[in-house]
Image: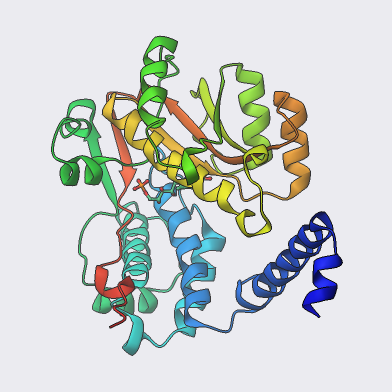
Length: 326
Ligand SMILES: Cc1cc2nc3c(=O)[nH]c(=O)nc-3n(C[C@H](O)[C@H](O)[C@H](O)COP(=O)(O)O)c2cc1C
């Protein structure tokens, strides 16, 4: 058998290996992602997260639209019923959902807006009894308070970064952006290959076309005048095992870029690129990218309004995701 293996040219072996890796990835994603089944707590939790996050983003609008995210609220009521609250209600994502649902109900009650056709008082009262985090799901900032820790120790600096979606439309000058990218370029990458490229888009029509295609920043982009498109170049990767390394290097770079922007007093909001390949083809065309470039993420950047809100976006405690294997 090993004799036959030696006779197969290495290129064919690599080809077969790449094919088998993708078949395996396909099976794993088919079986375990929530695309086809909703059969685990984690899957339901992620459905809940998606919806409460829409609600917390809805609170960022000024003025807040009455009865906003109605479908999300209806879905959340059903989803919360599907989980064992005795077991999971203190998990942070469930607490976040309860917090947003309570705030949603209270906001409408304060404004005397009737939502009883889709959200009953009895549901609100049951959520309220389970709620531990009695805080506002929205954080208010002034420009100074938001950046007060930008020269502090890493803990304070890191915690003070948040996604900002309120822009004035004023542009960051390109010299400052060079400084940001010099710092972001300190990100580690596999064998120091540095496969990431940063494309800065300043043409408003192009920005709007890209955001229309992506869909994740709807309602927040009217005053957005600069958008970064982060790509990772496949030319730098050379084995089937490395097929997703471009995303890992891209993800690490994205985080470093968000920190670099924060350090230089520039606000940002990453926007996902979890898109089908047809959207990649469109973007390659629109931005004249190399065919080998894979989009990792979009990042809206800019100068914020003097006062703005960000979502609370509570994080898990380490008890929820640190597993010690002795
Ligand atoms: C890869 C990635 C993609 C994201 N996509 C979007 C998006 O499409 N729209 C949006 O409003 N926020 C998006 N976000 C921002 C997240 O909602 C945000 O990071 C999360 O709620 C945590 O909040 P924070 O960044 O303020 O700490 C994205 C964040 C990341 C890291």
